[in-house]
Image (cartoon, rainbow, N blue to C red):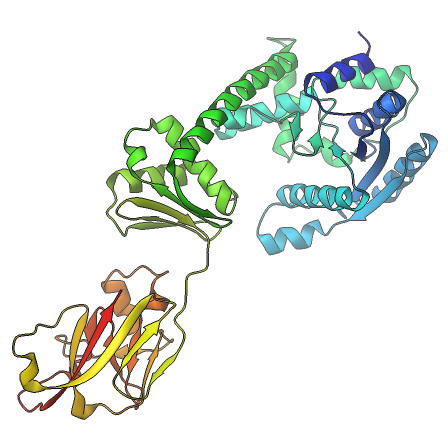
Length: 459
């Protein structure tokens, strides 16, 4: 079977292309992308396609890039396909995002693919990944450690992305180009042994072929099996999630905890990955983080939480597991000109103050929600605000000064809740009450107190 028919079969098998599609083709000048461009140009009339090609200049090989651009431009022109160039700053992005050059280049490529596709109203973005790329990816993920999701490899279709050559081996591509006298360029970075993918490509796979000459085809079929299983699991995860979601926004999701008691760990891991992906994305999240969340669910107490990469927080409540990347609330500054009640919307509570006679507290007991202060040592207006750097007070019963930050740590107040703890501030700047926790020892009532400022918080 000739190569074009194999590609036609792949397109049909995965429903990659429809009649009248506008397709953006990633063109680097290498054998795979050149083959992709040529094959799609051969299928252009059959599917009534509108083709465009795009070269992305990563700025990493300045001596080679001009020649590659000229080659890609001439090739596209010979096939009557509009050609575009976009440049990205891989080194700057890599440094700014603290990632490898390879990771940065990949992220930037996909950003540009989507941007240009939007500009030209492309229905599909065609990439030149081959069966060899699939085999290399499986081996890389196996070496690094991966579950079945990772071993499902490169998807033939993902949203607008299509990979028409994903079932074609590189040797067949090179034979096709040779038979048709089609030139291509060689990216020198593909020859460098310092990249692990090149080691797999140039050393590991040739050794495995001595045992199994059809290893590329074998691994390509293996990835297909894993993809089929992943599709089944995805259906299971979707059904499970529908029963578990209590509330959801773009960056915040709440799941009922009870179903986790009966879910198998295999499904639980997938549900958690899906939930995290729905809030911020899985960048930086690995197997250990998922296992930590499972441990939190099974062994943690209400109020326990985890702080994960990408500013993701996981909080266990009494009946709800919250996964969020929302910025924590910060209390605004309020002024009490006289004893009264005031609602603090950021903390969702009401703080009330009133002056009572010392005799009025004979039968009342201070608690986390109620504080008694010597009213004659306090001058209105009072401020209510969140913490500031350098804050300190004299915690009741301690007998000495303490930094508020250290107090929060000792009280095990979660760091994403510290900015909504109301601080009641005297007119001289002293903290009178860390609301819900401790009064300042200097303002406690004693035997000489005549008037009391009673402060309460109500949720």
